[in-house]
Image (cartoon, rainbow, N blue to C red; front, side, top):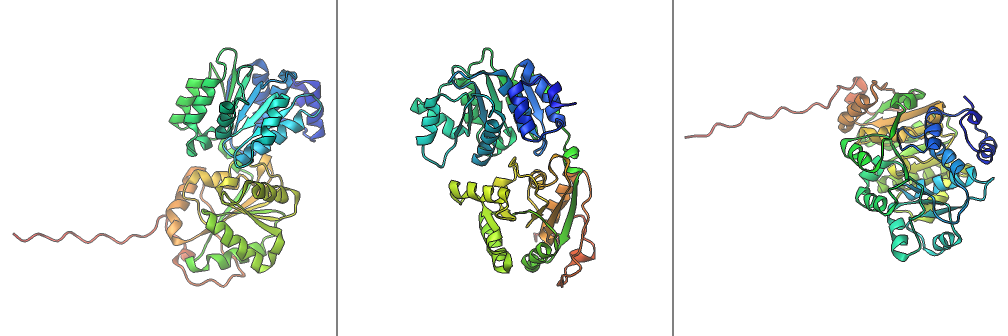
Length: 399
C-alpha cells in the first residue's frame, strides 16, 4: 500500500514525499484510516515503528488553521515533546497550521508568545501544560483531538493523576482520543477504558521490532567491566553508538572514560542532571554526526527517534527487563538491522534471565578474543541463576 491510498490530504502527502517516505509501516497503514474516520484508538506499539506519523499525518489532514488549539499531544519527557513537535512542523510545512511546544526547564516567554499567536497544535509535557492553564495562556475549549503518547512511561513517572486532570479540562463531547502505549498493564487498561469511547485496538507485536537486532551478553568480572567496555568499543565497527547506564553518575564516568581513551570530543553524555539546553544540544549533535557515541541513562531510551544507530551497549544489565527492550530499540529501528551488546557480571544473572524470558529467546554469551580476561566462573558457562549459599539449619533451643 502507498501513502496516497490512505486518504491523506494533498499538502500532507507532499510533506510525506519530501521526507522520502515510500510505504507506510504496519502501524501507519492500520492507524491512519481509523484516525481519519474520527474513531478513538488504542495503539500498542514499540518505538521505532513510525508511531508519530501514524497519528500526526491523519490529524493534520483533518484540520484547518483557526488560531485556537485543536490538537493536544501529551508526552512524558521534554525530549519526546521536542521530537514530536518537530515532526508536526515538518509534516505541516505545506499548510498554514502552527505548532506550540510546551515543556518545563525553560522560561515561559517564547511558549506564551507562541500560544498568543494562535497555535493549532500543542505538544506538551503534563506539568508545564497545567502551568499555562493556571496562567490563563492555555485554553482547551476548541480541542478536537487528544493524543496520549507513551502512557506506560507516564505511569512510571507518576504523571497519571495530572493527565487525568488534563483530560477533564478537555471537551468530552466530540473529542477524538488516541492512546499509545508500548505495554498495557491493568492500571493503564483501566485508564484507557475511562477516557476512550468505543476504541479500535491496534497491536504491533514486540517480536517484530526485536527480530532485526542481534543480541549478545559479554560476561566479565566486576573489576574488568570498564576495561572490557573500552575493548568492545575499540573492536566494534560502529557508525553511531549508544551506551546506556543505570545512573547519572555512571553516565558521566563512562563518558570521561571514553574521552580519556581517545574518543575525545566525539562522545557526549545525556541525563537528567544536565540542563535542558545542553541535553538538546547533545541529542542534536548525536543526530547530526557531531558525536558518534552518546552515553545516556534511560531518559534517552524511550521513544527518542535517532535514525542510523548501528550499535547499543548496556554498561549493566537493566534491572527492569522492559527497559532492555526500550534501550535496544534505539537500534534496528523501522526494520533496519542493529547490534545490542550487554556487559554481564555475576551479580546480574537474575536480571539477564528476566530479559531472556521477556523477549522470549536465549541471548548468546560471547567472549572478546582480543581481551585478556581475569578468571570468572561466568566464562565457564554461566548457570541460569546465581549460586546461593544454603541457609544453615536453625539451632535447637535448649529446654
